[in-house]
Image (cartoon, rainbow, N blue to C red; front, side, top):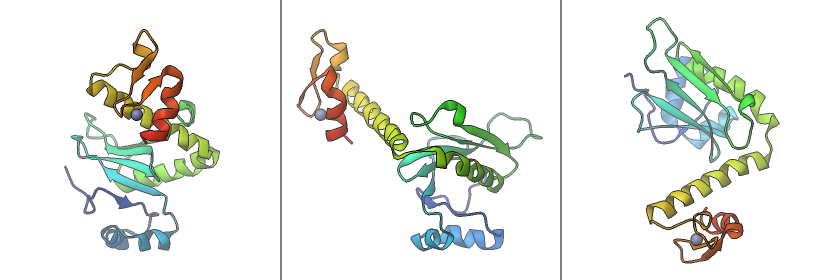
Length: 180
Ligand SMILES: [Zn+2]
């Protein structure tokens, strides 16, 4: 596996520019870079858990897509794949994906898809993704501690791991207020 020169937990996304200067900018990895190129919102983070090189693309704190090396493909096929879109917060039919011969081409195609996808989004769409993430993490937190969810108890009530009494109706507001 060929590691990119800028493998770091958080790397500023930058517009496609000539490769001679690109590596310098990648290494710079500063807010100044983002300001200069006017596209501060998209960032990418390398996923250390995956066998194949995988980058998760974030818009602020929302994970909006992936660029990764494809596994188990014939040598004459494009080695890079990308996908653009997030759920909940948009419909699967609005998502797009593709494959490309190089990382930079995959990134350029992702950016093109993003420019179509982003104008259709509202703040509520991004919030839907955040809320879902918080609720999922909270459910795992309850499960790990052996605590039942209100939906899993016959009374419809339970106790959160923070000590609060919760009902089916109050679970969502409680989690979003106290566990995000
Ligand atoms: Zn709680």
